Length: 376
Image (cartoon, rainbow, N blue to C red; front, side, top):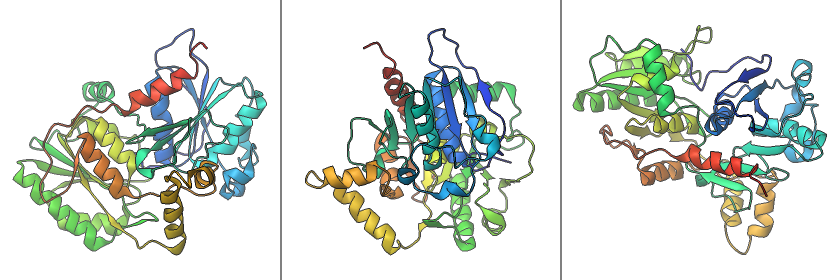
């Protein structure tokens, strides 16, 4: 199986049609091989409802440079991807992730500043961008072009899932209803995912699902790993387990979201949390264990916190805005904000079965982007 943690290989540009409009601006969506970045950029495009072209970027070794130092360039791209960034130029560029920033700047320079640039993500510098979309839990110093959202943009919404239910087979058709879906991410640079934890989590969720009268389906990701999958099987031996495979044909991820009745999501993935919240199903967050912060991360956290103060924000806010220091990333803050918005709650031994509040984050983003093209 595959979902937003499944990488897509670089390929030629793809045209995506939504609701055609003769007055709609031309749009490029720059995407990379990181599924979270791709789904966020495409999520903004989906929310706009305008036709767009997806430009799939493939990078060479220069990709590791800082956006602030690289400037406007295509030098970070492989030759086949570089050939795709050519006239006719778009009116709007949507990009997620720091590696797409030099490419977006190149388009801006090639159009003499006419192309609007919208950047998405924690590590995308605000300099030269018309809008920067970031999650509010980063607690970024405010700038006029900053759009803060609780959760990142997503390709998931009610109409999309309704269409999937009508057109695709139900992967849980043989399971007793209701179905609790456990979406499992895995280890990150900031979070551990050890077999003992995975086994305990699966057992916890299995007990909670049984108490709620639900059967349990578990969907893994490319970050779960073979050891994690084996541990999940031990912890919940009677659950239906849908294992991610790198060579799987098709992507049933939306079918999982469309046909589940309750969601449990590991807490390290903003994109999976956003997709679950946007599904309209009751959401339970199961946080992973955070790694001890390194000295560099502690310094960054101090700078990020200080940048929100009135006295220090002009200097330290500029350091983060220009991309030299990333905003701090404390996912416990994000989980608390999700609870405050009524979209879900953190696991407390029981399954959240309360209908969530309406998910409206993508509407806010779309309105701000469309305002860039409003008549003066």
